[in-house]
Length: 122
Image 1 (cartoon, one colour):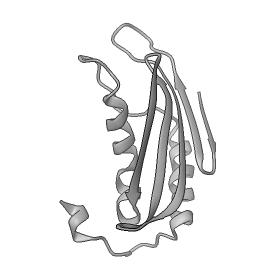
Image 2 (tube, rainbow, N blue to C red):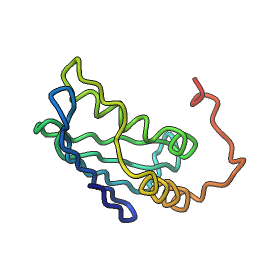
Image 3 (cartoon, one colour):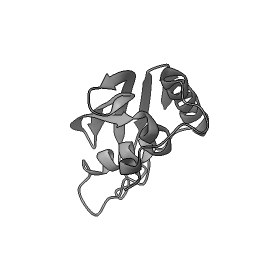
């Protein structure tokens, strides 16, 4: 199950077998200004993975957020799974992430050709 509203995504998944994983996650996000990085998105992923509580806040600067927010969310989720289980990606209908992507673009007024900080490319 997946639900989207501007600034909020809820994704729930039940494991299909013993090698799979379950999660019930809320992802809240808002545009903020970080004193060091400037405009960006403050995320908070909270809920549960494999029945264990998760609360992962993090910030991504404007030039980092669109190319990498799903990868960062998936990596943070992976930290809550015991090996050998792998958290490949947060499974969800693609149109949910399309809506989230567009909402973030609007919140940050992202335009094609906006500059990228060189230190964020490393």
